[in-house]
Image 1 (cartoon, rainbow, N blue to C red):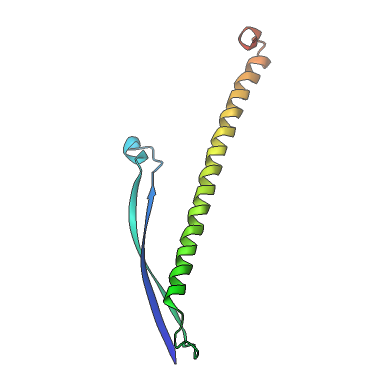
Image 2 (image 1 turned 135 degrees about the vertical axis):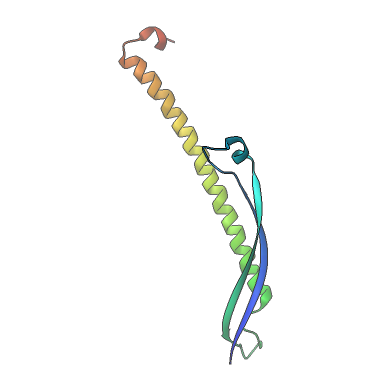
Length: 109
């Protein structure tokens, strides 16, 4: 006999928006609470009498949430590094433009 079980859970997420209108309000961090439900279907395990142990399902959902958090931190760090590299590139571009234009007075140190 096939059984279907479900587990409801909630999680919170925060973000800002990158928009050209309402710029100040969009930069404020704001969040949402999400409601989700996971459904599993399968045969009952003769040894346990369960399709899956709900404690195990909750643990897997929690592990997944932690993995997503780690990935999001990594992405954020990459964005910071990209900004740093772009700023350095812009500084070098200005310096090279001055050198190529022959404007040595502004490039002397």
